[in-house]
Image 1 (tube, rainbow, N blue to C red):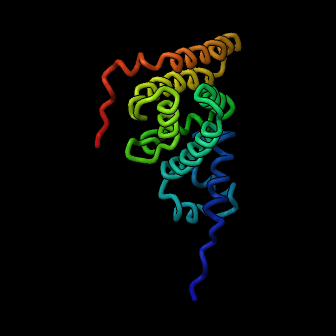
Image 2: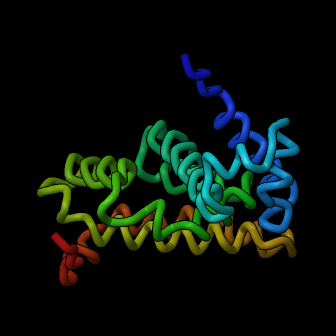
Image 3: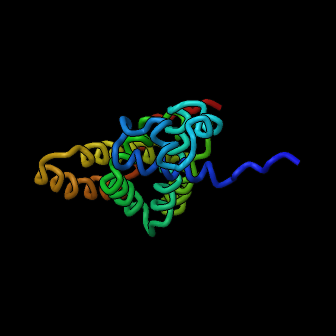
Length: 191
C-alpha cells in the first residue's frame, strides 16, 4: 500500500508562509525559508506550490477569506467599510499581498461573497435589484481601498488621524445618497 500523504503539511507550509510574510514581507518569503520555517524540505513545498507566486496567491486567498469574514459579520453597511480599512491598518503586509494578487483573488468570474452580500443589503435598504447598486459598491470599494492603502503607509500620525476622521463621513454620505451612483451608466460586466 502506498504511503499516505501528510495532509497537515500544506497547512504547516501556509502557516509558515504567513508568519514570514507578516514579519518580513515579500523579501522574506522564499520557498526555502518557508520550508525551513514549516519544518519540511524545499522539494516538499514545490510539490504543493509550483513557485513563489502560487504560494502568494494561496496566502492572498486566506487573507481574502479573513477580510470577508470580518466584513460580513458587520451589523451595517457603514461598519463593513470601517472594518475593511481597520483590517488593512492592523494587517498591512497581508493587505499588501491581497492587492498584489488582486487579479487572481478578486477576478470578476470568481466568487465574491462580500460584493453579493453588499448588493443585497443595498437592495433591502433602498429597494430595487441588487445589481442596481454595483456602482455604489465599486465606489465604496475604491474609496475604502484608497483609505486602506494610505493608512498602511508608515508616517505621520496626524495625517493618519485625519484620514480616520474623514473616511467614515465619506462612507456615510455615499450610503445616505446612493442615487448619485444609480443615475450614472451601470457598469458593464462580461457575461
